[in-house]
Image (cartoon, rainbow, N blue to C red; front, top):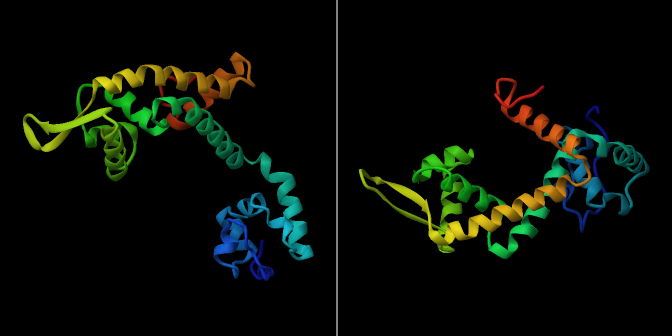
Length: 206
């Protein structure tokens, strides 16, 4: 969309999109940022927009649900919702479960090694470990040969939590895939694995 489109002149209370934060933003800027859909989803079409903008929203509303970005985002949100519900009885969330799984599947690791295995930054890793340690699920102690490094281990309580939490997480995944038959579910896994790891992956089937 070319620049010079009408600027937003209406009031935007009650919405959560970029327009509320910057009422002077242009429609083309929203499109470039991929944020126009967020405005549609937040109910912008109900607050007296100009006819031109209403027509634009009608087009977006009719088409954006088929866009890959939208589908992946909402699939992830659905998976996260199911996982959160399944893991709630065990007092952890999906990210904390991932940390426990990585730590339990290897020899005692440093915070840096654990962060590398999960593909997250050090600051996020420290925050996750702080939370897990406060719950008594992991412990940290100086490395026996390098006291500048902390070794992280899953505690006995952590392992007792990990076992049923893993089962619950697997069940949440089955619920997520329930609309698909087994072949379609496997194809989805294979396709996502291929996208994430690339054609050189040994597990790729495409």
